[in-house]
Amino acid sequence: MAASIQKQRASVQKQVSAITGKAAPAAASFFTVPWVDTVAGGFNVPACDPMPDEQLDKLIEESSTHEGVKPDLVRAVISEESANRPCAVSPKGAQGLMQLMPETASVFGVKNPFDPRENVDAGTKMLKQLLDKYGGDLSKTLSAYNAGAGRVDQEGGVPPIAETVNYVKDILEKLSQK
Image (cartoon, rainbow, N blue to C red; front, top):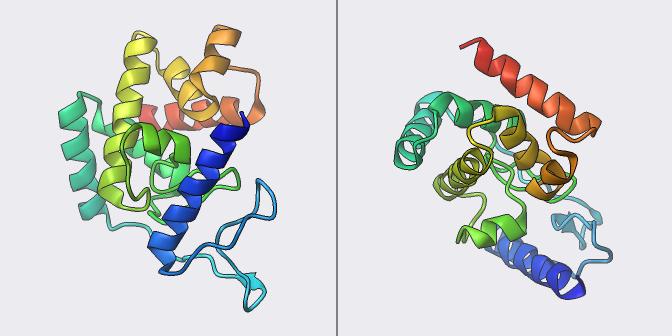
């Protein structure tokens, strides 16, 4: 476990350095936000606007077609995960449009999780794998995307985690409006 955490820290520090152009500060704890500007003592969170629809739609269409995943599903996940902001970082460390955890990004060969193409391609591949694993069951697929496949397998369905229950409900509602 400690080795895995160390690998994740190293991955995040490498990514922070690539984005900010300077070495990431050493983490004071596991949950230290890597965008802390230690010189000024404040936060230097990279701000970005949501991606324009025409650019995002093109990425979604290409990844969806390549992986055989419905574009509306990818679009709904992106909307829920990051509000279409490629610079989004969750309090838990998930990054980019589809909020990939550093370990997940690494598994899918993502070099820069804030690169929209890399992020959407990896997130769509992950959705495809989960759809296949759960026989197309959207509730289980979305639960696994949010809480992890292990938790979904353990519970036999949507885990009783308020965040996950709401996540699945919100995305299914978005999809039903299409």
